[in-house]
Image 1 (tube, rainbow, N blue to C red):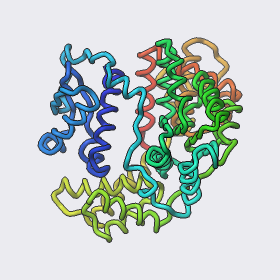
Image 2: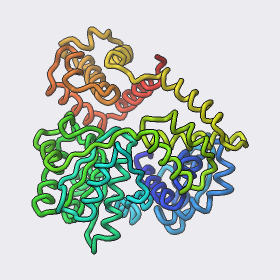
Image 3: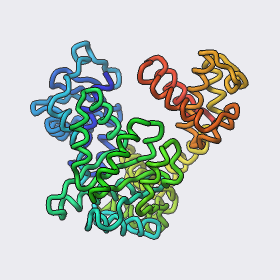
Length: 448
C-alpha cells in the first residue's frame, strides 16, 4: 500500500508547508505519517510525545490540507503507532484529480524568495547569477548550473527563480521538478503511452528548473529523454537551471554528452556559510517564524553548527523543541547539551566504507569477502556482488572506478552496469528490495 499512499501524503505535506511556518511544520507536522486511507478518511499516525498537541492544535489545519490535496470532503483521524489498517483501508483510491494535479504541477514554495535568501561570501555569486536569470530568462546564463553540498540553499535559489518569474515574468511559464519527479513522470508516461503529454509538460515551458540532477546516474532512458528535452529548450532560447551536489565534471554515471550540456553555460558553487552568515540566517528564521530564541542562544548554535544552512535550521528546531517538551525556555545550555549529544552520535556512526559494505553483504549471503570479490559467476554469488556494488555506490560516496578497484579490479563500465542491473531487479523483486533495505539499515546504524 505504501506506494499508493505516498503520493497522497506528499500532496498534503506540500499544502501544510505552504500554510504553516517552517519551524512549526518541522516540530509538529513533519513526524506525522499517513498510515492508511479508507474512502475519504485519512488515518494519520502521530508519535506519542506530540499526538495530543497535534490533535488539539493542528487537526483543523490537517483537514484543510487534506481537502485541498486529496478530496474536498476528506476526514482526518489521528492514530497511534500500534494502529494497523483494516482491509478496506488497504484499498487506497485510484488516482483521481488530485493525483493528476500532483503529477503535473509541482508547485513552488512561496517562502523561498530572493528576499529571504541570506547572502554571504560562500553564495554571493550563485545568488547574483540566479537573480540575473530570473530577471532575463534565456538571455543571460543559459544553462545555469548550481552545485554544492546538501543544505546550502540550492533548492531555495531554484524556487526563488521560479517565484520571481511567476511574479514579474509577464506570463512566462515555469516548471520545477526534482530529477526523481521527472523520472517518475517519464516512467509513468511510457507505461501509459502518454509520452506526447509528458514532452509537452516539460518542453513547452519558458523556464525549466531541475533539482538534484546527480540522481540521474544509472538511469539511461531518463538521461536520454532529458538530453532531448535540454536540446529542445536550449535551441529555442528557453531557460534551464539545474542543481547538483557536485559539478558537471564530477558527475559519475551520467552520459558524457549530457554532462557537457550541463556545463555548457555558467557553473557556480555554493559553499558553507561563515559565522556572520550563520548568525544572520538564524536571526531571520527566528523573526520570520516568531521563534522564542535569545540572541545568546542564536550565537551558541551559530558557533557550533557550521556545515550547512539545513543543519543550522535543524539545530534551532531541535533545541527549541527539546526545551518545549521539557516545559522550559530554550537557553544556550540546552543547545550545548543537545548538540553535544548529537555530535557524539555522529562520531559513533561514521559513513560506512566499501569494506563495511562487502563484509555485511558477504555475511548476509553466507559468503566470505574473498568469494564476493572473486571472478565467480555462480548466480547466488553474482547477485550478492551486485548488491554490494549497489550499496557501496549509494552509501559510501566512493567513485565508480574506486569501487571497481576494491571489488576484484573491475572496470568502471562493469560497476555501472551492475548498479543499473540491480536497480531494475529491485523494481521486479520485492524480496530482494527487502534484503537491500535491511542491509542499508544495518550499515547505517552499525557502531563504529
